Image 1 (cartoon, one colour):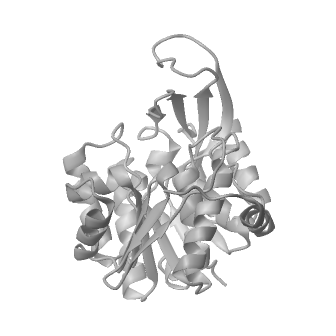
Image 2: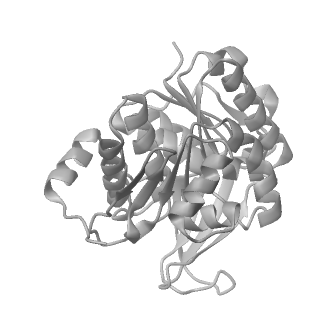
Length: 318
């Protein structure tokens, strides 16, 4: 039986600056390797929450690849469709943080194993037998073959009446804004839900207002747009309603991966047919827990951790 939720794309190790406000061009200390990659973070978080999840991707035949495959397998992700290839090293990202909240990335993806994902890695029966396909925009931007793999998976999902969800996960280091809008358009047209940051919504719609951006996104195809706004909470927009979810009060340690973990929690609620209010609260709590932990894949270890956090935590008043 195929896993409940499938995603595909980059699986990488990440190194991050130990000190704040240090540009990459200045020699210094990086910490890592930490398991990362947007679709990897998502499927790992889903598995730890108790959902069936599978990841399709490519790793290098090296120790970084061994680290990633071991971590995903141990956390419960179905790794049968992760290919280990010779001749390419496992993908790597470097990130440095600034006190302003800005993050700067340097990626080794296109010419790494991660960039070698291709349509041949997508098995029609495997996708068709799943319940939900989640696409990350970063996987559309890594390479032309990775983009074609994503489009193939979406075509199969659409023909099989699977639910499709989408996080544009824009990375300006990989692709320019005009191209971003172009490559995202086919996925938006067939997605049930789009989950994205306020800044990403502004790039795709041309408006900074989150509600208006959500309305414009719905006009592009999805039934629901969920805008993640960090310490301002989140808002879900449909044709029938607009729902605001206030943020939880936490001390941020590492924001990388929080959006991916939020997506995982939202999809968990979606596939379990929870109410929108319960799903939004659960996703907000899951994302909040993630930012208190180092490492992009270091989200909640179980659904019990999230539920306990919700009982004990305080929400901000916006």
